[in-house]
Length: 239
Image 1 (cartoon, helix red, strand yellow):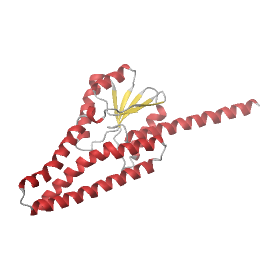
Image 2 (cartoon, one colour):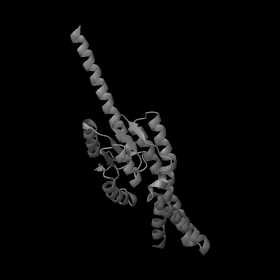
Image 3 (cartoon, one colour):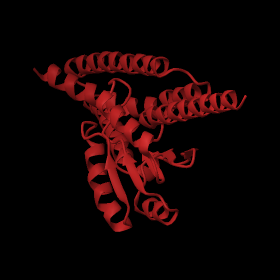
Image 4 (cartoon, one colour):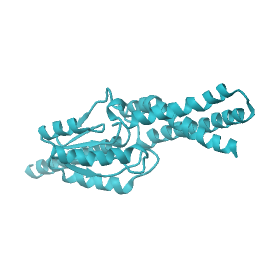
C-alpha cells in the first residue's frame, strides 16, 4: 500500500515537473518550427502526442523505480531526496504556470490581416493597451479542463476585461489531443463576419492559437480566390 501511494504521488510530481520542461522546451520548439514550415495540424499534433506519451511512460518508470527503492531503503536522507526533488519541481512548475508573466517572457504576437492578432495570455496592463489600440474584443481559448491553472486564469481574465472595458469572447479549446470541432465552428463564424479588431489567445500563444491562425489564413485565401474569380468573370463579360 505504501509503495502504491508513493508511486501515485511520484508519478504526478515527476509528470508535472518534467511535463513543464517538455512544454517549454521540445514542444514549443517543435510548434514554432512546424508553424514556420507550414506543417499540417495533423503532423504538428502527432509529434506533440508522441512527446506526451513518451513523457508519461518515462514518469511512470522513474516513479515506479524510485518508489520501490524508497520502500526497501533505510537511508532516510536519500529517501527524502527521492520524494522532495520531484515534489519541489512540481511546485515550482505550478508557481510558474500561475504567473503568466514568467511563462510568457519573450513571447511574440502575430498580426493576421487587419482584423486579428494572436498571442499569449494578456494580463490587465495588456488588456488596457489593447483597448487603447482600438481592439473590439479579446477571444480566449483557455479551457476550464486544463487544471489547475487555467480555471484561475479564466476567472482573473473575466475580472480584468471589466476593468479594461473590453469585451471577452470565450471559445474554450483543449490543446493538441482533441478536435475541438464546436469551438472551431464558433471561430469560423467570427472570422467570417469580423468587422472589428480581435486579440486571440490561449496561454502560451503557441498551440491553440495556431488553430485560429489556420482558420484565418484559410478564410483569407478563400476571399482572395473569390475576388480573383469575380475579376475574371467581370473581364470576360467586358470582352
